[in-house]
Length: 185
Image 1: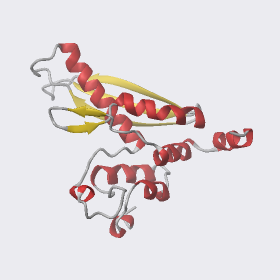
Image 2: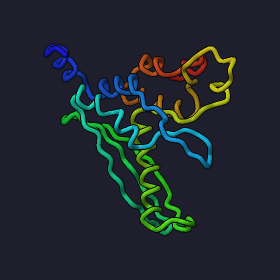
Image 3: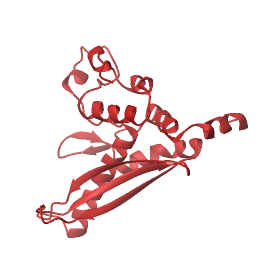
Image 4: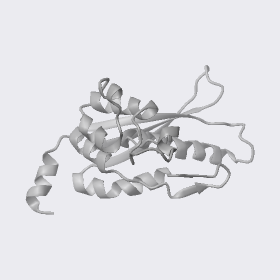
C-alpha cells in the first residue's frame, strides 16, 4: 500500500473505519455442532478475521467482561463489551449473558467460560454487524439473491449503526433491503 493511501485511511473517522470493516468483514462458520447439526463461528474466528483490518485502519479491538450480581436475578449475569478504538475515538457494543449455575456436566469454571465465549461472540457480532440468523426466505432455493434479508436482529443493529453515523450504502452491500424497510432507515 502506498504511503498516500495509508494517510487517507488514517484520516477517516472511527465511524467510517468501522463502516468499512463491517462492509468488508468475512468470518466463515468453520466450526460444527454435532449435537445441533449446524455450523457456527466462534469469538476466536471473529477475532482472527478482524486482524487484517486492525493493521489496515490503525485500530484496536478489546473485550471487557463484568459479572453482575443482583438481588433481582436468580443467577449471575455476564456483561461483555467489545470496543474498537483508533486512539482518539472509541465505539463499543455489549451483550448480556446469563450464567447457568445449575448446568449439568460442567465444572464452575466451564460454566463461566461458556458464558464468556458466548458473550464475546455476540458482543463482537453486534460491533461488526454479524448476523447469525438464517430466515426461511434466505434458505429457500427459489431465492434469487446471495445476500440475507435485512430484518429482525440485523435490522435493529443496522438502525443503531446508522444512528452512530454509518451509511445505508454500507448496509446495502451486505444485506438485501426490501423497499418498505429501506424507508425506515
